[in-house]
Length: 311
Image 1 (tube, rainbow, N blue to C red):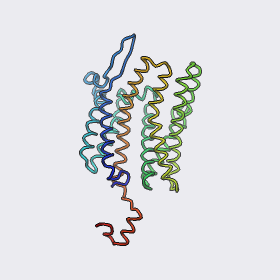
Image 2: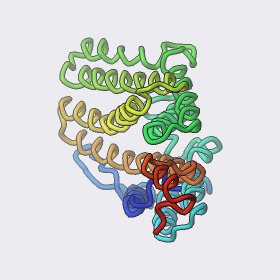
Image 3: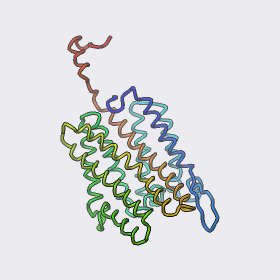
Image 4: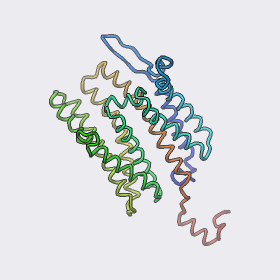
């Protein structure tokens, strides 16, 4: 253990888990700001849904609170195998429930931007796989990283570059925002948002290609994989910022307040869920990767025998 996440970084691991748990709990509490006909108010959607809807929707509303508490608890009570398995179960739970419950918060939030919720879930999962695979390859030359990253990269390219839904491929559909912005005379908002999303997904595509190329060993695999993980991380962080900037340039006002609270809440929830999946996968794989040996370790072993270097 300790190849991907060295024991010396255990404190950083716990801080990350604490942040993810806190983000989920804050996402549960964080309200929406609504302004209609001159009247404004805050709506605590998750809290207000409890007991007023069906069982699965109530469970979906309570999920961020329950998940956040579990993640915080497991982060403080470290068990070698219990932690990654529990974190993974918590992270992937909403993806599973969304398949059966189309009214849950995760599915409905994503559906605001794309009606094909299943495709969006696959996109998210493929990005998770690309990031995790890149992180593994950037640290150690292990088959698991190449396999996870490469397969995820293939899935991502299929989803964004091929007409999987029978219409325009997702990536090329983004260019329609530029035409719509010009037609609606919104050069400062929709066009800028379109350019930002095109740039973001272009970086995703580059990261996918890198993961696919790293299926086989290359001398620069470690560096390219590190670059791919950075592309995915920073591009993902840029999505909510791009949306908020686009809304602000479109006029701001009350609409900006509503979009701001909506983006913050969705970012906290999706960020907590996706981050939990990523940390859980890295932690789980870290349990099985063999310890790497440095040149100095081998020299000590040769000089002192099997007990070399152990004083």
